[in-house]
Length: 213
Length: 271
Ligand SMILES: [Zn+2]
Image 1 (cartoon, each protein chain N blue to C red):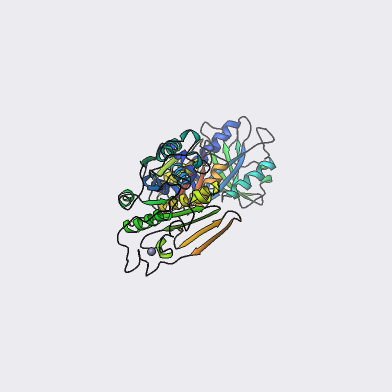
Image 2 (image 1 turned 90 degrees about the vertical axis):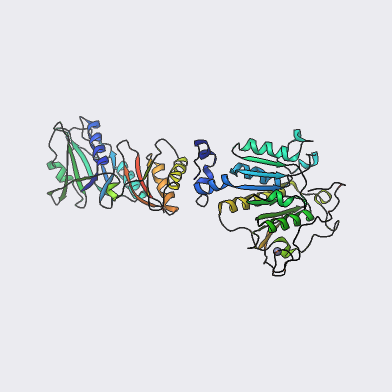
């Protein structure tokens, strides 16, 4: 699987933050690259197993759809054991189409591994870490940091950023989670600009790449 | 491209957000120059909306001073302004709305002698005068100087307006050859006017000026829009540019400006 450096770092941070318990969440992809993650509550609050909150799962899937993302996989952490699926992990892996990603914090350096699990058979998947933006094959020509700027001023700043560019150039807009990352790309798209992709950053904000029309 | 300050981004955010205006359109407004002729019922809302919109340079022409009978509809003038020059009263409110705007005041009548000089250098002219001879004068001068303008008139409950892009669309004379004889048509002060229709018509003219400067949409050209506020019926009549128009036709008979006799209105000549 391909995953952005930011998402990989973010889920390790999440795993470490949940210690000594296991952390869990969803991974979201666009065009085959994991560009977003949705941390979910581990209802078990245990160091050796997890169960996800169905309400949060539902909300996460709905948010993904709203942003044109697809469920790529489930991640969870092993606080003290290696990054390979436990018997329980295999038993509970119901979806053969998605990846199961495990973050092991057993060693000083966290390990992240991905697996496909079909009918009880585990097949390791290679993980390729890509740079944000690079994952969409582009590098931004300018950046507008709209962290902490609500709607609609974030769109005003994005439009100012786009106005300074030539057609075909790319603006990276950093937007807060929630309405900003839903509204701004939608509005920019309505005006004819191309939304190349959006990536969840380590701090929960989003990087959105807009190609000027 | 204009560099917007943070304050300007907030001030003009609702324009910048508009798909058809945006950053570029707002920059065009800030670089734009509009002359408003008449600081009365029509000129007042035009002046306020253009200033609020950030039209960079706004000229306003009027020789009158504020009278108490103006206050019922001329919303740039307040009770405390009675006796002040209308252009100064209007300019003070425009600057208070938006300090970004440069306001040029011309305390004078417009006449055949000065109008071409006055309008030269402006991108767009708004006719906010209350008498036919001056409306024709504005039409003629704008056609001669090739400056687009918005014609507007109100009386009683009725309003009418059209925009003219000289050389491209019908001018006022294409449809209305010459002013009606003096006293054939009552002036505003004889007939009365419902105050709010000055706002209804003036804001249409302001919108036309903003559309022209930003290049948005289609102007109210080759058409006369009229309304009757008693029934709120709006009517848009298609007009065509006339080959035999004495001003903008192929062999014009009007080649220079002249002052026409004006209806005497309360013994005061108005411009
Ligand atoms: Zn004509």
